[in-house]
Image (cartoon, rainbow, N blue to C red):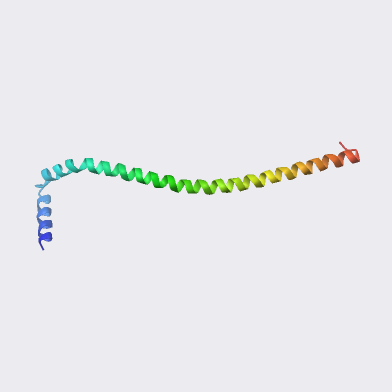
Length: 95
């Protein structure tokens, strides 16, 4: 009951702007804390974002390594085919 009464008193004082000096003092007092906590939260968020992006980068790295191995294999196959074609052309006398 007393919390409801306190809430009504604060609401009444706020409605008639009688609480503004107290409100200003509280804001002046807690603004530095709010700024500091916001900086800590932002830093923490950036750190978690960094580790999340590391997981994505690791997955991309594995995928790209596999793709690179496939492409190197295809290049080797093409070089072998090219050498076979060159040998066959020489054998039949076509340039």
